[in-house]
Length: 62
Image (cartoon, rainbow, N blue to C red; front, side, top):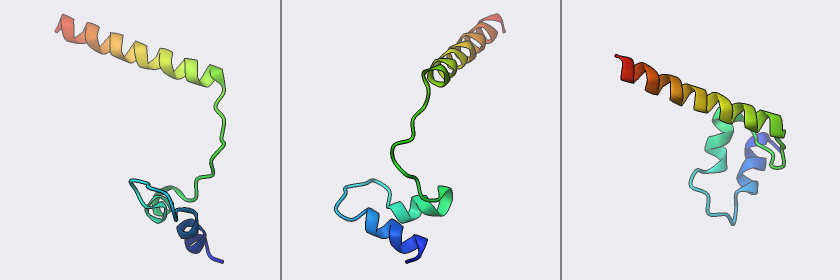
């Protein structure tokens, strides 16, 4: 069976906003169950906060 057929079969019976075949065109087949470590999550949160604070400081000074 082709990739396209597998993706269509996986989405039947679900109420997804975007059809799985459309997602597969852009990012390929996404398998559930991938885990992200706590350090990646915390690093992303810290980076996001730094961007927000730096943007705010820049905006206040200009």
